[in-house]
Image 1 (cartoon, rainbow, N blue to C red):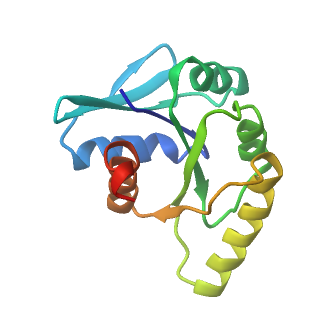
Image 2: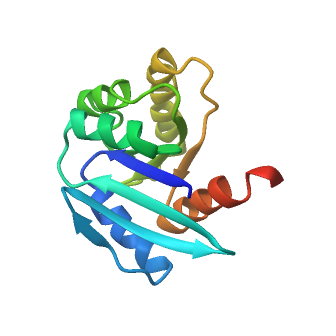
Image 3: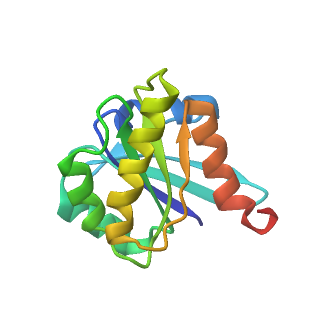
Length: 154
């Protein structure tokens, strides 16, 4: 079962609700974790996020059985120190599948500047990280599906 752990800015809580709504799934909240599960061709996908920002909880959830990490960043704010600290708390063996943007900004030059800054900071922790930035709920949802179910097609 592919499992995604979303962490980062607080807008991830609304994002996980929106992603579940796209697939007409219910969000479940238990033990300070909000999640949804979907099954496609007999394979179950789980997407979860901690309800509270806690580095130990993120490390624990990532270490348990996460296959992919999704760092949620407010594009308007950029990568905040707490976001970076949470990333640094994650185990290296778990793939950072992408940076999901919320609070999108309309200026392409500013977007490129934010992405460059984030890439430099992420590569301090994960030097071989391939840049994957996704914005808008539907694009994020399909990125999750593509990463979990269609990696052999990429």
